[in-house]
Each structure stands twice: as structure tokens, then as C-alpha cells.
Image (cartoon, rainbow, N blue to C red; front, top):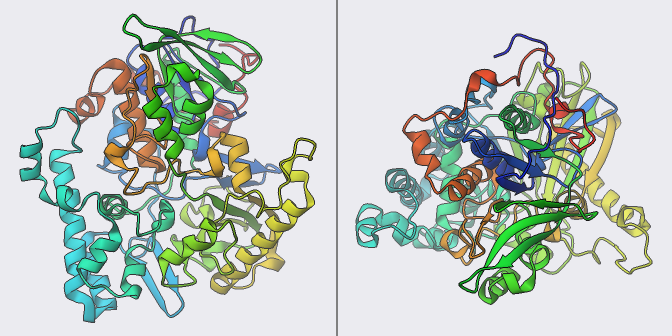
Length: 570
């Protein structure tokens, strides 16, 4: 790592970029980093002022720092995240403080508290200890989940080149249970409503009703954390984005903010198809390129950015039919006390009921839940000693729940002459009402906090759409459901020559591991290589010695912000 004091340097725009990446979330930045490290001229276009997508942090009054989307992460020692970072020489530059290994997630139900410990054996043992009368069923369910993940590690996810007969022989659990719902698995083993609720207590990480949640999805989520434990990123989620931006710039690529793509240009091919020729930005600027990785909202991509004649009718109808995942509502609090006195390095999941399917009924009806579940996360608790989260002796806390995306429920007038949604009184009243509801619920767990609040704000599904252009305010993309998961999603290579799909609605899905893994897959699709396999074989791309991120004076947020064309050039 460089011993010099870090100074931000923004390279010039690459001429005739080999690849344009739309969107600077972790999927786009990972794809761009892998391409730049493989000698591609890469340009990343971000419509907002800060790169990082949902991995961003934001600051208030230069005192408080809050995470938008990264609250905990797994696989950072020898797992998927570690391999992705090692493949481009970043793993040793980022620190990952561990959450409480005896309870990195804590589920609080009306008459039951369950702490999720690191390790499958510890987890199963605690389940059996909590529900001794259901031991046989619990071991049956967890055996399916463990076997499924062990098989995937051995043979991987099938694709168009897979020998299906051989795959069925080597991965029988994946074949028999992978795409069925968790409800079916629970019913097969006669589990009670209470034990089911504990088993899917982390479902807020994907926001899909259990009747539509694929077993492979939930097994993958649980396994991701149980294998090595759960961790946070020292300094906040922006650190990952900042290191990736630095790498892209170090290899001659460029991340550009305030660059909203309005149109992806295509031309007809001799075989009657279409190929990418460039992108047009809002304002009219045209950038020529033969390759585009689109990591933003999938509906916006196929229904708005592309000419209708360039999109095959089958894909257009498939994309129209996709359901978006349930969006989130988040409250950000700055408190005048040390939160570690009231909570360990854990995530609290406050569940108001055992019937997990019922959480989705108000959302489907376009209404607010009268007693919503609440997720409590605190960077101050997970990253103690780091000075960037809050003033000395103070703490930050984030409260989250699911919420309807229905504008009418939020009191938003969408008529042409109406003021901006955030200035409408009915919207502000709905936002304040839900904010206070979540604070009430948080006080049940943390004790009195209202008199300690020094900073308070909230983000709604409308906020998410404003910053990421996502349909329905969803931060998770299309719902990860049994009828639109895995092979039922579009492939990375689309029928439009030169257009590669990326982001949370791609086959790898959302979350940190999904986004970054998908970024590697997108880069592989552009290069026509299996970069994941090359990294697994020990390959490290680029020259890590030339990277400058993480040194004295390093500021990840500063590395990611205001990267417009007018920015200073190296």
C-alpha cells in the first residue's frame, strides 16, 4: 500500500471506450474493475452525484455517516467476496470487523428471542434446543439446505453447457428442492408456525413471501453467513465502492457522475437482429461504443432505454411481467449516547407476528402495516472505535421495514401540475407517521431514545427511485421468487449484440455478494472468458502495486463523489 498521503486524481475520459457500464453500484463497479484490470478502456456512467449505488454512505453536517444498503456481509475470509477482491488485488486493503459470532442476527418475536450463531452445527443445535419437540423436522429441513449448498459448491450452477444427466446424479438436492418454495419444505417436515418464523427470520434480506421463496435462495442466504460468520466493512459500505473506483481510475478507466443515460443506440445486423452502437446521455451527448453493460433497473432498460424494434417481443413481454421486490423504508438516527451500552454487534429483527406470509398482505393491498417488522442496524455497534460514523460519545442507528410502493398510500399526487413529491404535505405526513411508528418499536428493544435524537431523517420507496431510477422504489430489483429466479431470469448475454445485462435483476441477484458476483459474470460475458474460474485458479488481474486507495488521508466518499467531466484531471 502506498505510504504517500492520498490525493484524489481523476483521469481523462477514455476515447472510444471498449465498454460502457451503466450504473455505478457494486455490480457495475466490479464489472468495470475486472475489465479495466484486463486492459479494457472502460467508462462507468452514473446519473447521481456519488458512485456506489446502494453501497453508498452519506454524511450530514460532517458529523453523522449512514449506510444506505450495506449492513453486514459474509464470505470475506475464503468465500466468494474474498475471491472476488483477491482477483483484483483488493482483499488486503479492506478490513472486515466481525459481528457477534454467538448472535450476529437476533430475532425478537412476541414471546421468543433467537440468536443466530456462526457455524451450521451451532445453528442447528440452537434450533433444536429452542424447539426440542421438532428436532426431527428441523434436522430434515437444515439437512436439505446444507446438502443443497454443498452440492452447489461441488458442481456449481447449471448453464446451457451442463450435462443434465450428470448434474442430476451429482446434485440431487439442488434438482429436487432448489426451485421449490420454503413453505413446501417446511410442510414436508411438519414444522410449526413458530419454528418456520425463526428459520426465515432474515427474509427481509430479500423481501419475498415464503410461499414464493426458492429453497436455494434462503439456503444460500443462511449458508453465506454461517460458513465464516457475519462481518461489517470498516468505515462503511462506501469503502468497497471507493476501492473499486480507485482501481478503475488507476488502470485508465473512468467513473463519471451526473451522466444519466437516456438512450442506448443500436443498428440492424445482417441476420435481422440488432447491435449496440453507443449511448446518448440526457442533454444530447453521444458516446460511441460496441459494448454496454446495463446494471440499472431492468424494466427501465428494456422498456425505455432501447428502441422497441431492438427488443425481441418475447423479452419485452417477459420483462413487463416481472414483479418487483418489496421496497424498503428506512429511518436514520443520530443519537447522543454510545449504542454499544445497549446492543452488541448484532442486527435486531423485531418481528410483530409469527405468520411471515401476513407481512405481505398490506403491501399487496397498497396499504401500510399497522404493526410492521423492524430491522435495527448500527454501524457504531459493528465498527466501534471508527471515528467516521458519529461524534465522540454518539452513535448512528438505522431502522428499516418493508413498505408499499403505492403512491396513493403515500399521499403522492402524480398529476402534471403537482409539486415535487417530497414537498407534498400528505406525503410528508405519511413519512413522519411511519418514522414515529418505527421509533416506537425500536424503543421496545433499545429503551428510551427519543430524547437522545440529534439527527433524524427517513427514506421512502420514492427516495430510492429518485436516486437509482428503480421501478416501484425497489432496491432488490425483480422479486427473487420461484417463478422468476435463476434460469427464469434473462441471461447475461442478451439477444442484442454487445448488450450485457447486470445488476440486481440478473441471475446472481441482489445483495453485496449477488451484485459483485454478477459484476464478474458481466465482465466474463464481455470478454468471452470465465473470470470466476480463472480467479479460483489463483489468477490476480492487473498490477495491485500501483493502486493508491487506503493510504493516509484516504476518503472513500471523496473518491466517489463529483466525478463529472468538469472534475480536475490527472
